[in-house]
Amino acid sequence: MASKTFLTIPLTSIALASWLTSCDRQSRVPEHYNIVFIMADDHTQQMMSCYDDRHVKTPNIDRIADDGLLFTNSFVANSISGPSRACLLTGKHSHANGFRDNTTSVFDGTQWTFPKMLRQAGYETAIVGKWHLGGTPVGFDYWEILPGQGDYYNPHFITQADSMVQKMGYVTDIITDESIDWLDNRRDKDKPFCLMIHHKAMHRNWMAALDDLTLYEDSQFVMPDNFYDDYAGREAAAGQEMSIAEDMNLTYDLKMLRDTAGITGGLERAYLGILGTMTPDERRRFTDFYAPIAEDFYSRRLTGRELAEWKYQRYMRDYAKTLKSLDDNVGRVLDYLERNGLMDNTIVIYTSDQGFYMGEHGWFDKRFMYEESMHMPLVIHLPEGLKRRGRVDELVQNIDFAPTFIELAGLEVPDEVQGVSLLPILRGDSLTDWRGSLYYHFYEYPAEHAVKRHYGVRTDRYKLIHFYNDIDAWELYDLQNDPHEMHNIYDDPAMRPLIDSLRTELVSLQHQYGDTLGLRLNGF
Image (tube, rainbow, N blue to C red; front, side, top):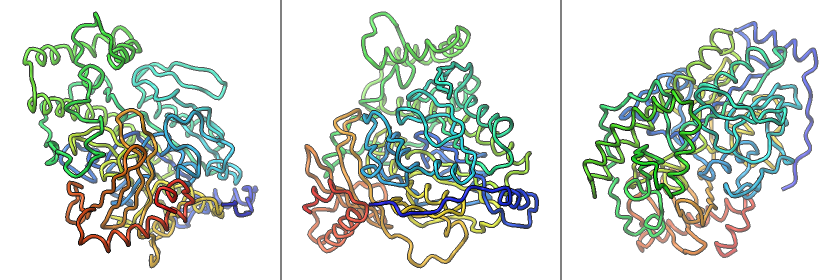
């Protein structure tokens, strides 16, 4: 779709003076809101106490929800890291922005992105942390990014000077340090700003800050009711390779290193490489903690369900203790904004690039259109002038961030953007024609975890999925009666009218977004 012509008006000295005045007078609505966008990696709603308090406490993330908005129906368009980030930047689905999966080499930085437009309009823009789109960021006044996934300990960063710099410490602390330093010392404080803080945590293999290693060791986490799912009636689910019992690696994922001699597996070698990023003292502290756990584990010779449940508990503990630093560092950013009087004119977003499985269906990882990975946590602190508070049940998607930020800056959203601005929700407007369905398309197969390619439609109650490529399977779920997606009712004759209706909606969305591959697979 061709882009609409729009006028970008830089902030003149008069506009800047108006913006600064509005910031000083808290009784007035700012003309240009600052934006702080905090995005974790693989952080899921089940591990945020504002959504689900069974497992962990996240008091600082909860601070954002407590005085702002908690979105209950927030979703990704493609549940995998690089593509999710491309959807965020462009406001377009993966087929439209060209970054369909993580095997794609480089994001096309020549296309429209919201940071470019904000920068043209006079915003100061910055990104710190995980990029994971190949190449280097475009449209930012300042950036400092991790190469690829980055390391948890003593990570390297790629800088604007086109150099690789190692920074000593724990990655979540460092990303926050650099972000606060930019806010405090590097930005032009006469301009509104957009700062994107992109964390490595909670990405596999969940390595905690050294001071947090002992946390949760006495915790027994509640197992999901469908941990022992047999995948009846769900061919694609049965063929995946993301089972905690079968596919979670004892050394790489769970740190049960017994003997470095004779290691040949790729994940085991990768784990040794991670240990090699630590200083001698850090490595000693780390291995001294895990060594007795490993010794006890191997002495017990667990098998079957005992082994699967032991692996689940270790996974949950490592994930939870890694999360502790992430939540602490969210608190550091909020404290800085409060100390410096920025909360009244700054919108603060906390989200993740997608959801994650915490044992549901017996899994870890993401990718599937099923709820745990398609669901994306989203909480937003709203400054003055944006009055809605509390729970938001409208269907929203990560393609909606770009148009939202553009409208917050008072600009017109280009036609090529496929997302919908959330500004009416944030203002508390009456919503009479909000979207009733969402589109999803996952492409990365054959690849790690063997999740088949698929696309589908989700409404407020139903989900229709088509798995394709080397498989041709349809699935239908009634999320009201089957929220854990255990019963595929596609073959129930009584569902034919519903299926026809959902197929019509699916095709309509594929036409709307221009997904020609999806249309062709759907017979159009």
